[in-house]
Image 1 (tube, rainbow, N blue to C red):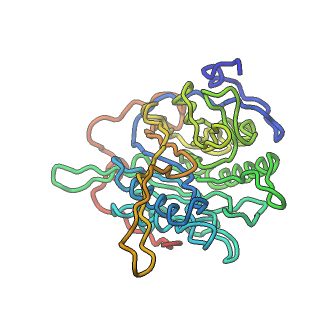
Image 2 (cartoon, rainbow, N blue to C red):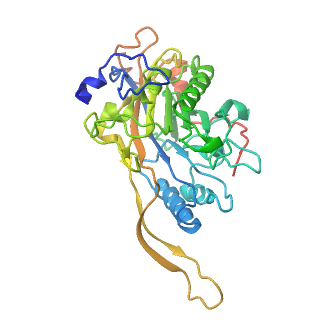
Image 3 (spheres, rainbow, N blue to C red):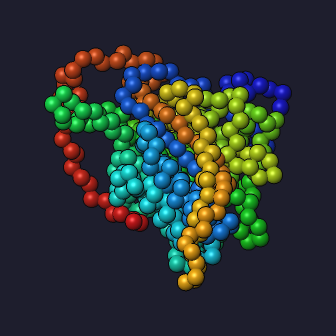
Amino acid sequence: MVTSFATVLMAMPSLATAASESCEYTGPPPPSPGNVVGQARVMTMNVFGQNDDSELQCEARLKFIGERLAIQRPLFDIIGLTEVHPDYVGVSCDGEKLVKGLRKNGEYKSGKARWGHPETSFYEYDGGTSIFATSEFDWEPYGDHVERYSPKYKTRTAHGFVFARIPIVRETERVDGRVAKDRRAGMIDVYVTHLYSKGSGSNACDQECRYKQLHQLARGIHERSANSGNPVLVMGDFNIGGPNPTADQCNGNPGYGDIMEVLRNPRDIWLEAHPNESGTTHVGKTEQRIDFMFVLTDPYFTNSTRQLVLRRPEQVRLIDWQMPGFNVPPVGFNSNGPRWIEGPFDVSDHIGIEAMFEVHELGPDRPNEVVKARRGTPTTRSEKDELEGDKPEKRKVRDHRK
């Protein structure tokens, strides 16, 4: 590719089609700054909840990921994972290992965690698409939050997307010891998705198939978020190769131009932060960038006056963890105890992405201009309500999977 990535970042939208081989990023430049009203640390990863290595090693990997997430400082406000499955004998390993490890810090419990979706019947395989957050979010009715892609193949992962409207709440301690909850950042509409890979035979899904799934995702976002007043964040495993600054082509399944067309030129957060650095998230025959974090800006998807603005480019990072090894439990009465299998081992066949966003209020009449920051103590009733010391009324939320 002759065109530099700095130029690509500012390129005008192209007329991508389902047959497009475009490897061009046509998203907008970073938004103008406004009044900072909150921040959110976000990550996504396909955790490879399949027992292709071995069930013991797979469960050890998931446990390691969960426990590693639990000790992050600061914690991730929003976690979007794919392939966190229930235990299907011979097919996947038990996603509970990850979830229990993640909950060791007391967070991500009950109404703050939904994993293993979309649900399928007992003779099929669960989707494994999951959202965890540090604040509670609604999950009813189920159909409003989970959608399975068509065609509904019986593959090891039931692909689709999950949606949650997640409050961004910042807690600060007052001089009198009471905890103030700053809710000015409002909510973020979060979508975590997993599109089909190639497959084979009756389960084959080509570029045209994924193009239709992108349209299903776009319609789902429009229906849920176009009038919500919230910023829209979409992330996950797209199984489509995107532009990688250190490669001269989009390695992986074709269709990045389809993403740009169907999601109407979203902000590709890795390219926005690192236009000249490798963003590889999957290593197969070639280094591929197939996992993405997008912020949608088109009015078809969002009418928000708040923007997700990257705090600093260096806080957009790849998550490439390794575990040192794992224990194999004793077998039989004559065993001497667990046996340690020395690593290191990659925690997944994918590499995750993280970003630190600030939530900027831009004002309803000047979406692209700076709004002067409010100073001093809040004086209006609405401003006082935003900084409250009492706990909000707890919503009744069905804990779909514990």
